[in-house]
Amino acid sequence: LTEERRREMVRLLHKLAEEGRVAVRHARQEANKDIKRRQQAHEVSEDDARRQLDEVQKLTDKYIERIDELLRAKEQEVMEV
Image (cartoon, one colour):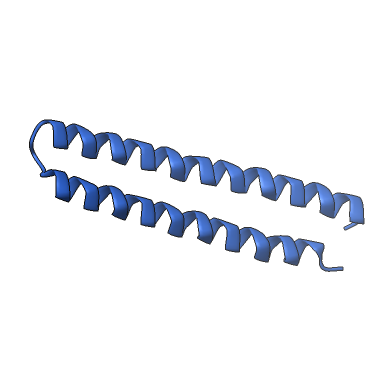
């Protein structure tokens, strides 16, 4: 692969990684909406809802970090000559 082609592939990798991050954030929003809906319907207590929201955020952070790790590894692999 030429240098130019490798750079194009890296740009594509960044685009795909961002799409993955957006998908994870969208899943977080849906989960948060569901938790808040259940809290307002008095299906879960306020404390439980807070714990669930915190857990959703931890999972979101974990998976976004995993996407970033995979991106760094793949970018390094593509840029090797």
